[in-house]
Length: 507
Image (tube, rainbow, N blue to C red; front, side, top):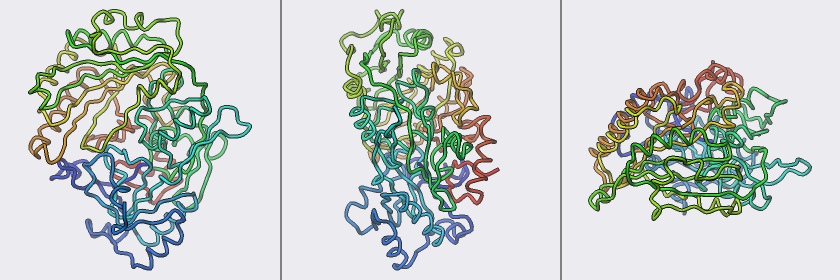
């Protein structure tokens, strides 16, 4: 559930907002004075804020309240300067409905947040921040074997704990502070996806508050078009999702590993991308080529390749899967843990991030299209990276398997038929890194991305890695499903109450 504002790519990139992350794109109420004034914010009378506080049982925070700044801080600090006028802490669907009524009455810009990890800052606003974090919980549904209901403000960490208690699992990510809502609505990737499909493929029903204030349920039999759209259509487009019903699978022991290579890197990367693509569906991996920070370069830290992942019980061993690269592994830096209880193994894989400054660009690749020249170009670009105070990486998340057994139009998540989800980062810290250096890093990232996409015939972009600099984001995120998504948008939100810089527009 990630929201923010409608603006053009070109306008978004103009000025210091591109480099220092001054202000995120702002969500505008259609026809409001705020929209007309293009920069000011409406100032509801104190009585209006009092009315909202009475209606929202979870409470309302204002800037003068303790912990206000902590609650509103996003994970991507590029957008941390955009502070809301108030934060509604929703604890129920009724609270959410009250917020929708209030913002329409006040003509107030708003954004919705579960975990606050929206890469492009679409969960920030100068208006009302609808904070879902109090609406947290996950429970097994009685009499529904393997179905678990997750509330709309739940963080991944809570979902994982409940799944561990139940002895179940789903396709899930590694970052435990991400909101489950945004994760699920945009597709949801993780080491189980080649075995079980995208996280959104396991979604069996969802409840949401729509633009007219209704609280509706969408599944295969009721509001089926809306259900289809919520399985990969991205958060913030169709309403505020208050719950998700997920099909789960038994949690069984796995092998987890973090393997590192420090020599013959172009050869190793080509072999990994080629050979791992043929691995069994029980295998999930992420390849990272890490480029050292400025200080690490001074300390002579080299570029390295690592593969993090897991293997469910399989007839094929890890050694057999890695084939030609196994003997090249740097054994002193690598770890393999075999036959580990599932959720204990996830503690090894987990990533807990702190807020920092970043931008990520992504696309989808087929292994057969990644030739020697493309691999050489990747390392040439790595050598040209303007070093910031933080390391960066270009990565390959392994897709395929069960993901590709679902047709591209069966759900809103369209990216089927690929072997790798590619991404390249730009990371920095303020004020350590200068505005000029950040500009150079972002220019490097764009040129790297464009060149490698051309060489590999890469397509699309992952909607859960929203990229504010992406030109044709509509087609990149949604491809042939864009037309149907626009029709669903017209049906549930024709006036575009839910809008942000990369929001789906009604047909």
